[in-house]
Amino acid sequence: MDVGGGASRLVDCLLDSGYTDVTVVDVSEPALERAKRRLGDRAARVKWLAADVRELRLPGKVDVWHDRAVFHFLTEEADRAAYLDSMRAALRVGGYVVMATFALTGPEQCSGLIVSRYDAEMLRDLFGPDFQLVHSLERDHITPGGGAQRFTYALLRRAR
Image (cartoon, rainbow, N blue to C red; front, side):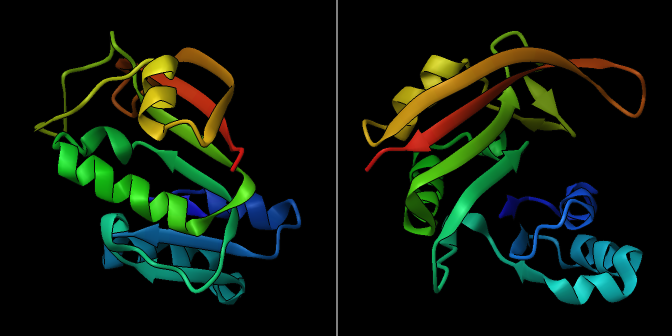
């Protein structure tokens, strides 16, 4: 599942790689529609959900929860808690979270919004004892405008 996938091209790459059970979630229906148009007939092979991830409840479980740049926009504790509840409800035991958020040295704002910043240990602590930090790294993301934004990338496994 690609959380905040909107018009991202990750879904294209997953389909090209042979994945068959792909879900894209985004609060923006227009972003999902752009992705569907881009994929053409292949869009029918994807589950598209226009939803607020903090309120998301799926009928089944997913193996991978991918989030590139949604979580850091949740600056209120209640919003983060709701997000984590949705993620725990959706992710099977043994499944993985691939998380990308602004690093501690990343920007304090994005698109005019205040963001939260994390390192891998902070993410592990927020996710709680049911999750193991498998791998992490920090990298600069180059924006379409050519600027650099420092990101923390973390791979966590749900142990129980």
